[in-house]
Length: 216
Image (cartoon, rainbow, N blue to C red; front, side, top):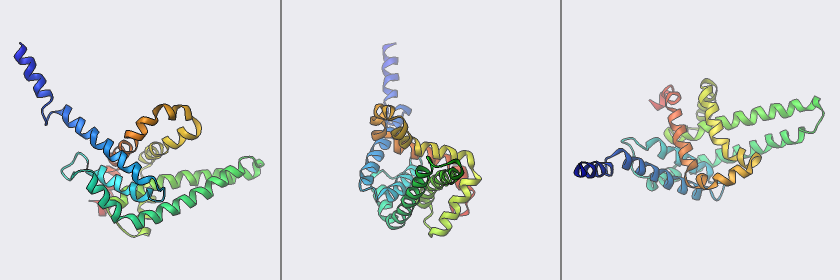
């Protein structure tokens, strides 16, 4: 009986056991998350870091997986220019829309429609950005077709779009509206959240991306 228990314990910790594979996967996510946060520190590099993050997440758990650090930095450098331009344009757009929402909040009701419109556009722009970097990481292309594809997917796959928006905006929402909760889970966010979120999003995008010819 004791020998059987020892064999069972040995099999549990074998390199190809589900438990060990899960620990390896979790370790890869943690490493990827820390690399992503480190490359986001200049702020202006968040676009390139996001493209690299999604590229690695698409490969995780597949036969195309070739580590974490090297593929991340290869994609980071490869898409740096285009990703940075897109990210800066998005920041400027969000700043303008957010300012409109803020300034019209205290205005008479006749002017508040401008704020509501700006809020809708802000959310939609965030959804589109949720598609931009996964698309860019898998099929580099010119900005115009990239943007058209992202807009098409954001409207054509509304359930996925809502999920992507909620996942991407959760940390910001907690910081702005429930800071106490954010502080309690800040360790998880620093260690694991962004890589886990990107991995989930890449799985949500499997069906939408399969409808785009360049992703087949």
